[in-house]
Each structure stands twice: as C-alpha cells, then as structure tokens.
Length: 59
Length: 223
Image 1: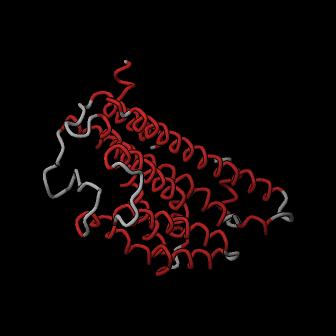
Image 2: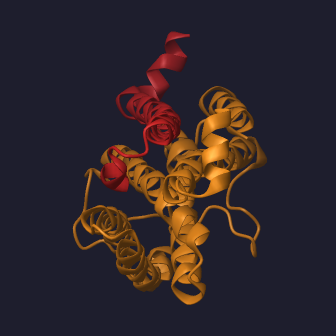
C-alpha cells in the first residue's frame, strides 16, 4: 500500500495530477447541472411573470 | 452517458494507477499519461466540435449548431487547462522543467487555450446574441488551423514532447497491459465530455428559444 502511494518516488507528480483531474471532472459535471437548473428556474419565473426581467436573460 | 463515462474513468484510473506495470524508463511517472492523453485528446475533439458547430451556424444560420458550439467551449477550455497542467506535472520529473517556451507542442496547446478563452470572452461581451455567435464563430473557425499544428508539432519541429504513443496507422508503441487503461480512459472522457456538453447545450437552447411554445412547455413540465 505505501509502495503504491509512493509511486516509485513520483508521488508528488502523479497524485496531484490524478487529484486535479478528478476535481476538474467534478467541477464540469456540477457546473453543467447548475447551469441547466438555473436556466430552468429563471425561465419558470419568467413564464409566470413575463413582464419582468426578460431583457436581462442574455447570459 | 454521464454515468457510463464516470464508470469507465473509474475503471481506467484503477487500471492505470494500480494494475499497469511501471515503465522501464519513466518508472511510475508515466502513469500521468492516463490523465494527460485523454484530456489533450478531448480538448482537440471539443475544439473541432466547437469549430464545426460554428461553421454550420455561419453557413446555414443554424441556431442549434451555434448553441452546441457555445456549450462545448467551456468544457474544451477545462480539458485544455487539464492537459497543460498534467503535462507540466509530467514535464518536471522527465524534462527537468514544468514549461519550455519555444517548444512547439506546448506553445500550440497554449494557443488553443487562449482560442477557447477568446471565444468565450468575445461571445459573452457582445450584447446581441446573433452577433456574438457570428463573431466568436469566426474566431473558432479561423483557429482550426491550430489543430494540425498541435498534432504534427512533435514531428515538424524538434520538441521535448515525446511522439505519438497510439496511432491508427501504426502498431501502438506501448504494451497491452499499459494500453487498455488508456483506451478505457479515452472512451470514458469522451462519454463524460459529450454528456456535459449536451447538458450545457440543453440549457443554451432553452435560453435561446425561451419564447417558443415548446420551450415554455418543457420548462413548465420541469424537464
């Protein structure tokens, strides 16, 4: 186990690489889901009250 | 698709970090390949998707194509950043430096990073969406010349970067024990990035078509 974690002396490079990769994957998946949910929520509000805020929906 | 992608990535990471044997020259440092190559590959694939979407939008005024291009950009930017970061973490122990200015492979990938960034900034900064789609789309299409430069940079110029490990035309320069986790990782990363891009594209299309009857129905149904 400790041999596995040591990565033949390259632990300082291999593990940050793996950690960063998984962090970016998690960030991408969560950001995409948040974006879709956010758009749906804003549009539901807009459809309920069409007179306000339509112009600021550019983003 | 997201679940399948994540499962493949988990299997590939397990295989690459634990099951594959160490390299006779690079020891365990070569295991960075299992993260570096898939992210670099997807960074280029997503750029091609963004450019093709933009080109279709520019030629045929197809709004869905523009939406897919806009959805692919942040995903491609993240994968390009990851390819650069994992490459630096590999370069330090193998080449003795995180970065080398003037190296064609490194520089051309950095250019792709800024092309993605430029596309997103340009797209976000223009008020009128159709103008933003067109202006950023032209940038994406022009930037396509960078893709073959990235691919062939290690052959055209002397580079610190090693040559291709897997190629469709030649036998892979890697043993099967080391190869299969890499292939699984590439498939996983592809499934993952297309799932994320599709989710972003859904948000993008709903936003753009928010006045349309069907979009209102979809939003009301909570789908």
